[in-house]
Image (cartoon, rainbow, N blue to C red):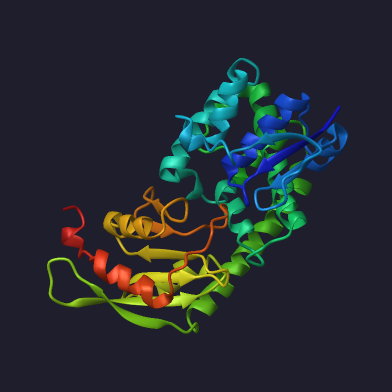
Length: 337
């Protein structure tokens, strides 16, 4: 049997881990508590999007080339479920699809205490801008038993598991482990270390945000002759942007550039980034920029921790000039206009 390679995004959201779990099951008929053991037993391997594409076996695409957003489905999980008719095979599948589809629109699963959906995003933000293969696979391995526990728990008591608003929290993971006949203590110890690590990284980001050097620029205001305050900073830590905006309350727009050259643009409130996004797209057609509109404040991203994108060719001054030409910051009373 030829080797199986599961090609996944640069980093994975919880949706992508569930999709990987289901793809591996569909292709090998194996499910277990350990990703590493399952890969070993089935002669399989994970290949991240930014790694060399294998040439010696079958490649299973997990939301890299066939992005779920282009397939008229709500999640990478729903895509594999539909491909293999898994709703007829695994208890709990319909429920997890509904949860992840909604989360991909609203992000609601991230806000709960002890959220595993939030944890995986935080874990992939730890370390360097170019984390190693092993470091990224260890994150997937940590969350793997949480996914397995969900499906095993649903097989034992689907009604109970379906009654939980968010089964992907530390609290419900403990209940799932007990439901599956496991002793929760050892499994939870690993998760708790991860939660502690991410909290320390948030503290580090806050300290960095309070001391990082910034370039200041004017941001035009909507229906006003004045200007707001914009800042431009350089940081490889994805946490710094949020911490910086919490620290610098007068800043209405923040541009963050990584050392790789990739850029993210953040604002406050329900702003309208459509014109700015269109201008950036016109200047650099293709797949360079992404307009994120799911959350309370929009963002314009030139790559992210989960998606590899070519860095923009625009310099700091060119980016700022584009912002000033195509964006006006709206006060709260104009944000719904």
